[in-house]
Image (cartoon, rainbow, N blue to C red):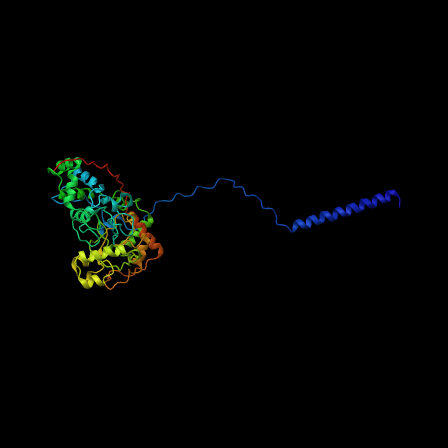
Length: 408
C-alpha cells in the first residue's frame, strides 16, 4: 500500500469514528427532558382586589342591649357616705397601709394587688400570717356596683365588706380600737380625717367609709365590649363577636351572667371540684374548721363537712350547701385563677368545665347541663370573655405618712 492509500484509510477511519460519536450524542439527547424555558411575564400582575368591608358575624350592639347587656353607669354611693375626691384619696392611703393590721405588716393591698387584677394571683389566698385561707381572693374591681360581696354574699355594702376583711381573724385581724389609736399617732391622718369628716380625731367607722370610697373608684376602663356597645364596630374581634353570640345563645352563659355586671347576683351550686392544695394542707383545714365554728354550724355538720359550704353558713339550709355567689365576669381576663377555690387556672378550663355540664354534686343547680360546644366555639367564648376585660388598673402605692407623738 502506497503512502497516499494509507493516508486515505486513516482519514476514512477517523470520519467513521466521528459519525458514530455524533449519532451517539444525538440519541442520548433525545432520551433527556428538554430544559425548561424561563417564563418571563410580559406585563406586571394586576393588583390584588381590595377586600370590601362586609357585615360582621355576630350580634349587633342593639341585639346585645336587648338581652339586658350594657355599659356600667356611674357608681352610686350610699346617702351616709357621699363620694368626694379627698375621701377617696384618704381611702387609697389606708388601703395600702400595712400598719393597720394585727401584726402591722398586712394591708388590704396584700391580698388585692393592682398588678394581679386586684386579687392576689394565687389559687387560694395566703390569709393572715400564720394561717392559710381556704378561698380564692376576689378582685375589688367594680365592687361599687355589687349588691352582694364575698363568695358567700355575706355583706351588702362596701363599708361592711371593708370591716369584715379588716377585722377578720384570717384577713387583717385588726382591732378597731387599736386602729383608732394608730391613726391618732400619725399627724397626716389626723389632718385628713378632720378635713374629710370634720372630726377631732380619726374614727374607725370613718376609716371604713374612706376605704369604701376608694374601692368605688377602682372600675373598668377602656373595655372593648363597652366600646362596641358605644358604636365602635372594630372594638371586638370576629372571634369575640362569635363568642358573644354563643354567650347569649348556645353556651347559655347569660342565664347566670346577665346584666351590665354580667352576674345575676344570685347563688348557684355548679359542682366545682375540690382544690387538691386545699385537701392536702392542714393549715387550710384549720381555717375551714374555724369557719365552720365561727359561723355557727351544728356539731354534726362540723364533723362531717369536708369542704366550703358557701351560702349554707348564712341560711343553714341544706339545699344551700355548696352554693356560691355568681361572680361578675367583667375583668375576668385579668382576675384568675377562677372559682371560689381557684381550682381552674385558665378561662378555657372554666368553659370546658361548664361545657361538660359542671361537676358532681347532690345539690347541682339544674341550670347547669352539658352545652355541646366544639373546641372552636369554646375558644370563641373565651375570646368574648377577654373582650369584657379592659385596661389594667395600675395604681402606684402612695407614700405612707409618718408616725409622731400626738398625745391622747
